[in-house]
Amino acid sequence: MKKLGLKKVAVMAAAAFTVLGVATSASADTQSDLDAVKAKITETEKKVSEGQVALSKLESQEAKTSQEISTLKKNIAARSEQLADQARAAQLNDAGSMLEFVANSDSVTEAVSRTVTVATVVRANNQTLADQKADKEKLAQKQTELQAAAEKQKEQNKELAQARADLAVQKTDLEAKKASEDEAKAKAEAAKKAAEEAAKQVAAAKSTDDAEKAANQAEAAAASVSSSSNNGNNNSNNQAASQTTNQASSQAASTSAAPAASSVNSSSVLAMADSLTKMHIPYVWGGSSLSGFDCSGLTQYVYGHFGKSLARTAAAQAAQTTRIPVSQAQPGDLLFWGEGGGVYHVAIYVGGGSYIHAPTEGQFVKYGSISGWAPSFAGRL
Image 1 (cartoon, rainbow, N blue to C red):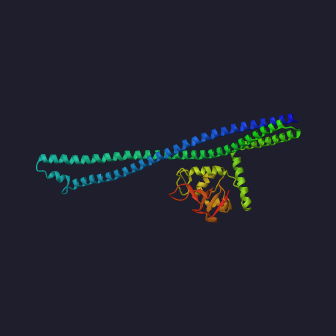
Image 2: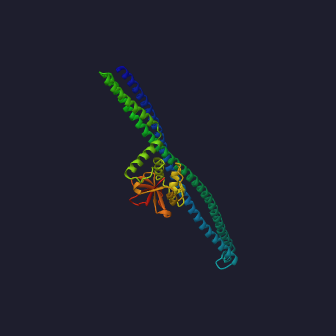
Image 3: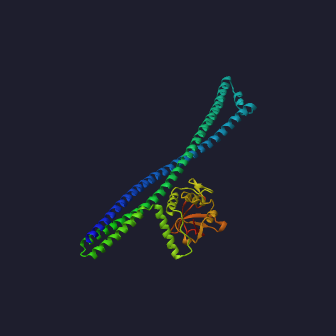
């Protein structure tokens, strides 16, 4: 019986070693993927920053060029008026006109000299006017080029911002996967240790009963190996869903009125929403893109990336949710201000009394606090 127990435990220990090797390898692969995504995020953030600086310079140059064009327009208008005055004076032959100036010469030589002077002044004024018009055309062309470059840079910045948001989601998913694999690895290590200890006990057993007891301990270790293997194969979405379900269960223990947990992967939603707070995206009435959001445009954009189609207004979005008290809100739920058809604002709850929203004109997508501005109710998708 003792030999049979040793053989049984040896098989169990081998299984534990195998699972531990798989778990360690999987965790290392996920860590490698996670490090690669983090590196891409750092690189993308650098590009986003450089893109914002480039756009700022282009817009500054565009503003300067616009000012120069405005100045030239004024100068051209003044010069044209001056030439018109000179022409009218010459035609009317009034006192002080160019003809009067020449006619009042004391000699032919002086008349010739005055004529040359007048011609020079007229020619200079005409040349200055022509030069100013040419400069205006060049500046207009430059302004057109700057506007085109600025639009192109805005599009590039938008693409970079989208890439940054997508990478943030990948990072969150990989972190969840890594946590799951690390847990599986820890369980496999514990199972391996238990199997080794059981093997020692079987070898040291002085009776059949002791050997059988040690073999049963090894069997328990094997069951732990099986459990850790199954856990290691769960993907990050399943893990996130399990965590959300556990949170919902805990919530239900304190209040039977709480609805089921959200079907949306809240960790991914929050990761994308958080990344948007770092991009200086302005509030834009009716906005629903990275160039600008209003409150419902922001929530529609974020949840839309995870397969949840939301209506376009805060009131309509409220109608799509299961209403719950703010005190029962969980990360990933929506928060609403106003009642019924008068709901006028919506935000994404992140937990800890904080939320992410697109506030109002002149502000960017950012965090807010329930203690600073309390919502009327929460909604679960």
